[in-house]
Image (cartoon, rainbow, N blue to C red):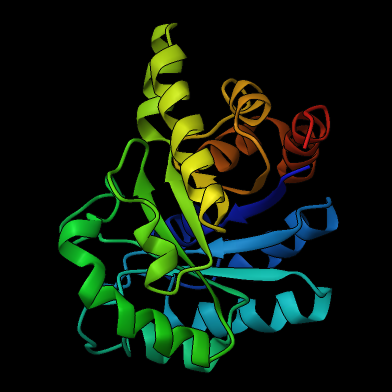
Length: 252
């Protein structure tokens, strides 16, 4: 069964929209872990639009308390600025179990593409080595169908995270076969080079089951936007448990 890591960014969005400390990101993460989630994911942005550096440190303490993984996502090339020490520096402070590198720019609303290994490999290699020296497992955000996915292993990464946005869009249209086949093919190519496979972005109760059934040896899914939205109706605990039932019903 793939592990479920809940992304709690949206809790911080709601908090920051009003100011103050409510809703409490750590309390929400604790509720997810109490319901059985196997990890917590956050993607702090340099502009602190949602998760802040202090949240990362508090969540690092929480995940250590529970003995589960913190997955810290971010752009390793984004320069430090006030309130954001830089991705590697934040990892040095929080020591997440996993660092997921994502090529997002400041102006992006959300991550919407993976790395280009022909262009990015040389620049990524020392960043990956720096993070692994901190004890982090390193995963790289990739598009399904990306050329040269095996380069991720050559430059030191441990896993890839499949960007599942296009799959989710195709599933919503009622024809996900081609998008799903691309995910499966990329997963198999990555695994053939020794890489583990994670997945995330726009996965939901509606599309997760088909994805988890098709992608072989899926290790982890990180889900935030849909899960938090669904939890508005059904509560965090009930929603997390629904996702765990979906994952446990699938082979692997």
